[in-house]
Image (tube, rainbow, N blue to C red; front, top):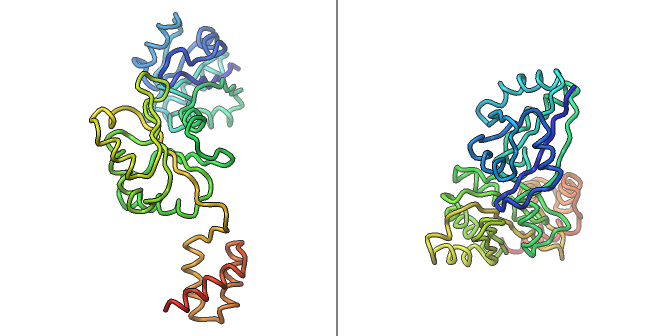
Length: 277
């Protein structure tokens, strides 16, 4: 049985690859690449002559079986994506999952990742963060995801395409106008840049030069303040409904138990709602 190596490759600067990764790519029998033409530049740079096999979103389910047969015959295979760590918003999930089921030894070869690279230099809290991949394309779904961040204490990280970055920031401006954001652009490349501030501030920076909207982006969103217990909007809505049917103390107790919150905080919210109506 051969080994499947999950090999991280540079996200921009070709020198951001480990000695181990280069050696593995030279030693394996086959390299499964997201885009063989794109990856050829990396292989040529390091004089790697290993044959490549195209494995991308459109053929992964079908081709995974072919690769598993090669692994079962004793061949070693490396999986790479166009940039960074495979499977992190890149193809590879079906292959790795099927390899695990088939008993194939899967070996991670760590290296560059846009998520970690961006977070390390953003200046936002790193004690708790959540990578959420690409935001939805459709406006309503995107707004729902961003609205949910109102109650999220951890730093949230998204990838975003250049053609959508301005529209996405406009949604942030509407829903979270005061929240601190950091936009990382073209990580490890010549025009690498980090822009911090509110959505309004970053939109103004993008408008300064058409080149500012080109490239690859990582958008990081600071978490909600931790100095007080964050009450999810869903819990407040349920409290309001139950308060019409039950005594406020009882309604607060039910919601507190359901959402694992403090009853007194909910009771105070209920009182504030009553006094404002």
